[in-house]
Structure formats: C-alpha cells, structure tokens
Image (cartoon, rainbow, N blue to C red; front, side, top):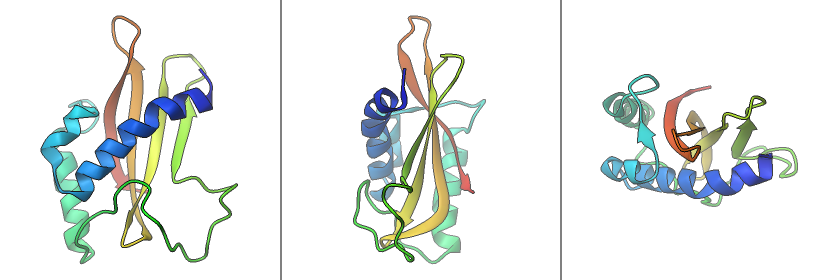
Length: 132
C-alpha cells in the first residue's frame, strides 16, 4: 500500500470522526472508527476533546475541510492537515489530523491507526487525541 491508497481509505473515516466532534456527537464516532482500551478509551477521548475546548474558551471544533485562515499561510504543497504514515512492515498505516477551531489551527491532533483484522481487512481505530 502506498500513501495515496492509504489516504483514500483514511479520508472518509477522518472526515466522519472530525464532523462528529464538530457536532459534539461523540456517540456516532464509532460508526467510523473503534475505540480501544489499549490505545485511548472512549471516555478518556471525550474528556480530552471537551476539556481542550473548555480550557481554551472555544465552542466547538471545525468540520472536516472547513476553510482556514492560518497565519502565516502555509504552502499547500508542504503542509497537509491530514498526514498519512504507511507502515514499512505492511501492517497498516497511521493518520494524523490537525484539528481547527474558528478556522485557526489549535494544538490538538487526532490520531488514528488502520490495522488489519483477522481477515486482513483494514479497520480504523482511534489511537489518541493530544497536543503535539
């Protein structure tokens, strides 16, 4: 699998998770990606996401693909809000999405992992949400 193939798999999953976060509809996230206790349990994820908003005086996260007014503007050929990391050993890939609020980057990153199930089908998991 190459990065382009992985991006095609990841993008609708990340979009769904981010849009659920923007709508504060955390119960729907698992339609797109599973939570794993060995990564980040569901309640810890929700607490981290909501605490970040409260601690920073923010209302909500932006929806996936929302227009941004990053300052300074990033060279689009160099900066990607969604980064994909294909594992060298062929066991899947990771995805990181820089969350935004009010069109501005914040320091919070959503991390997902796509790994094969017992049938070899890649399954998405919420790996973490944290300040990078």
